[in-house]
Image 1 (cartoon, one colour):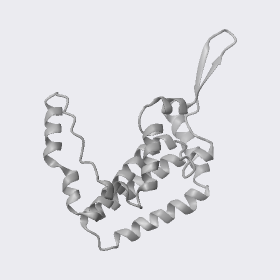
Image 2 (tube, one colour):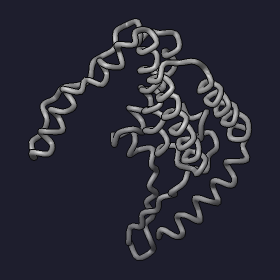
Image 3 (cartoon, one colour):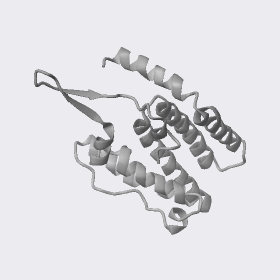
Image 4 (cartoon, helix red, strand yellow):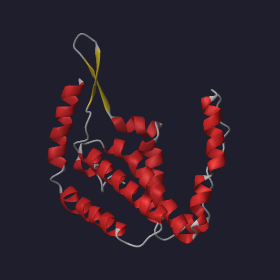
Length: 192
């Protein structure tokens, strides 16, 4: 499939999926909640997360409605990570500075620009008060599914792609891939 055919097919799938109740009712409702939350008196760090999360939410919804929920999932994962940070900041505003960890990040970038592989130094891990917070429990479950299933190139992801193998009459093997998910059950919110 060339790029022009891909774009046309994507637009066709979008026109079908965007008529589903999820995209007509749920997505606009969440969109309204994002807009409402921006009018609240929140610390600037939380307001920034809301704006960034809103952008990512809309992008994820559009990509999923174009029949590519697997490509929307890494964005959804990022939004869940934003939610974790928001809860951490809500519990202790100093958590934003811990998360930023400018010295660690500067060292990693310095190594990358010098052509070196940066030392493994993961960002700070959140404590139980964040990870077991009632607002995050279901999201963290979804995060696990996304990590195992679609955010990384894993055997589970490869199996989900669904490449069809057909042997032609002359014995030639032909591979076919449906570039778009047409099964509405696989499009949010039903996929996890």
